[in-house]
Amino acid sequence: MRNFTNDAVFDDTLPVGDGLLEAGLRVPLDLLEERMTDWFRRKRYLAEGDTLRVTEMVR
Image (cartoon, rainbow, N blue to C red; front, side, top):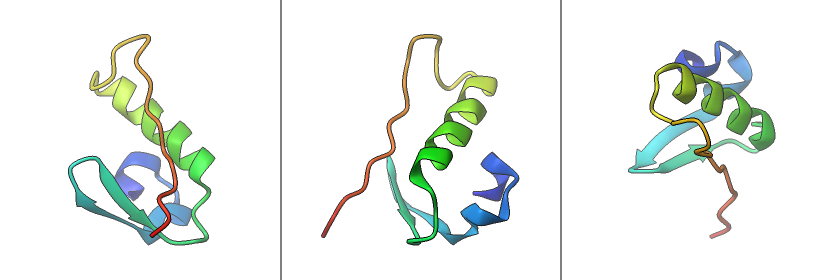
């Protein structure tokens, strides 16, 4: 995730499927959502008005 965020705090993340990301307990989800939203907007993967939502799944 350092590619998206340029921050070492997100090194404990791993894409595990389409739309799914596994993150360590030390990863601040609100900051991850903010940084990923910014990156997706700059790459034009998110249009103006679209939102990215990061939520915790409890197994």
